[in-house]
Length: 352
Image (cartoon, rainbow, N blue to C red):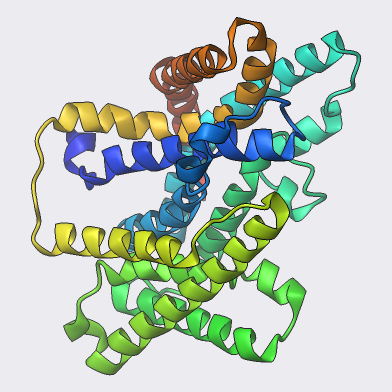
């Protein structure tokens, strides 16, 4: 129960909803439209499911908010440990599960899956910095998160622990993103410094920081910069998706959803709005990360394999199976690995 008290509880069901929106985006829109993973399409769902990709952008916003809380007054090693325990156990299980299921399925239809070397590289969670041969395509977002965490880690090493100092670091990061938008400094720089996505992390921080602490000009100019760059990233993303999928995704509707999400988090925190059913929400939040990690390729395989029972029945069964896998990972496998990993890190931590 102590863990529940330390969490921002209202974010837990939102995390689950966002993860589920990404699931529906892949199953009911992207997978069938591209037909690079499955040959089954759900055209009746396109008008809604096509907006599910926004779950990722909102996840980045939540990450900025939550990390801003968790990084304050922590040492670099404490921050490193908390991130490893949060990310690695579930990832190891889900990556292994996806690798074996893909291997079995592809062998059955006479195709070759990912090599053992690719699997081992993915298990380090650093594949995005090597060859970007992800076991599952959704892992690209973890590369973005790791870059964000890494910058904060090295900043903590320098001795900066206060929210104000960390806020100013991210402020200048967003400012670099703004400059890069007009000058187009370097494509590699954009990727390495995640300049397209850092405004979302910063927007999450803006929900937390007090204007009195950073000054009115810094606060409002930072807000304007982040909103402008979020609109710019969404514009590029929507144009790309509409061109690639011949879809009719509305840029302004996407922008409205993201802004609504930002102001919703802002007011929930500002007025410290409490919610009921905390235990249920806690478990929904715990399911989010495993669900996100296992849903895409495993889901595609399930839908394709079950097509003979009817495509919507196959979709429903696949959703149930993927949710069941997420529960197994979250409630049983992840906890055991995290406990063992925590003991190992404690041993290493005491010797440093």
